Length: 195
Image (cartoon, rainbow, N blue to C red):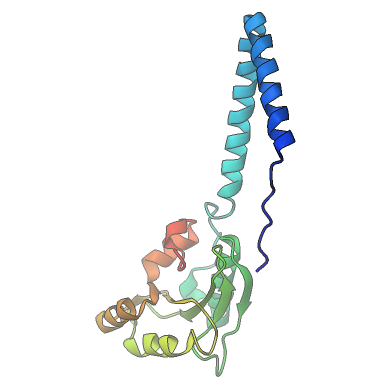
């Protein structure tokens, strides 16, 4: 990933800004009413720009992804596509749906908003079926070496067994159950697998 070059501020720029600040101070001192008016306009402009920038930083994360259907009614492929759309909505790049035979534990690959490569294993299960420890073991054995990822998550429409939760916690794999998936789909950034 390319790094940004930092702009250097020259001594002339600093001197020019200092002179401008001095002249503005002198003018405001000589004309206090205009000074108050100008400060009020600048304050309104700063607040407006700040609000606009803040809204820009909360782009799609707060916007819920409208569900065309209940994830339980989606096919496995549709569920993988749905998860990929959530990743894109929340600022991920290079999002790929790669699930299928011999997927080595990966259904969605992405680069998260922090620049780290991640993997999602999708498990569209009925509410009564739990995702077991064997799936956590498969993802743990492949996400770094086979896929070159920094982190991994298993996302399900159901829930996880206690052994799966314990092992995932031990090896650092994120588990997203049906309630966390619902929060993520509704736009809660903290529920995304990379947070």
